[in-house]
Length: 448
Image 1 (cartoon, rainbow, N blue to C red):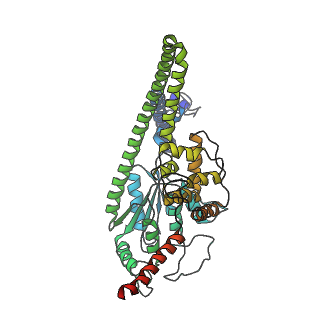
Image 2: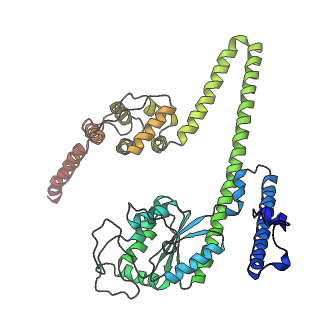
Image 3: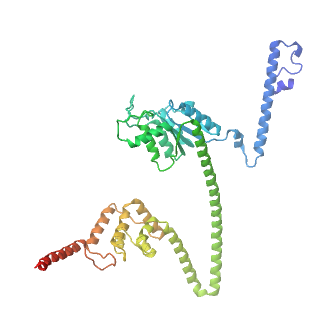
């Protein structure tokens, strides 16, 4: 027993250092038993740690970070909702989230660190932005207003304002965090009634304390993506739906990882093919120079030009502005000239309105789309592929296009062939009126 005492650092009580066990007082015997238990616990803990360290360092590629293997990072699930009307749902969600091995984040459980220099709801938004998954539960209450707004003690039923719950959803959505929306079945049923009576303030709803609950649902459903919604009556339905959704999400992540590995493998194969192609190219050049020294340089240059032209063609096919022009039945060669040859935007307009075998409507559409910044970027991107400097677009692009349209009409440019004049709209209208006049003057003669 002296050795054990020495191990736990209780010197002076070793063999021969105290009274015989049979002569110990009850208090001393009690203290002696306590020391024994402490020593046994310490020894057990030491053995567990030694065993754990041995296991950790026996794994290939493991390191000091593995010492925290029992505390692996878990996905953080932020649960957003009003509290008093949904506290039983929040409690069930907490148990469910923990049961699947994830970490629930609920404000009432102290999972949110509140900053002393910021409003309370700002800390909630920060936690929502850092979560891995966002679960929104919508019940009959809309919730408190966001900080910084014109706070009132009580809002009218139809009065618009933004709640903390809505702002939490917006924060998570803006961060592209996977969102899962749960709506109480009674609220969801009344939402259908609201859609038919949106502007009727005489309707009274039984399941919600503010019409903003319905506006929040509508706001979420109008999102283009990341807005799955599930209507529930019992917490067990929530658990089943979330389990399926998260399983599907995990499967997609595994599939994406597999596809990434495949892409990496393909990238490696492409690199190998590129190296092999370069080697074959060098071999062929040597062979050609040996067989036909005089013609070899021209053959090699021609083939290189064909190769680069093929690459340019593929790049242009993915350019939206180039495809926009090609949609007007313009050949690839002509489209390339229109894009690459002009030195200014005015020259581009001139070339566009002098296109042969293209109707006037097509010319106008090619020019008009350049009112868009995106089309201007695509045009300069195509010019870069074709080896031309980017065009500088003036501030009055729209005015220049309108002026060009007026000038084209005034000069009677031919719709189909450049240089062949056609009648203007006013001249055609005048000609048609003359025909009608001649017909009317002929009518009395027929009657006579």
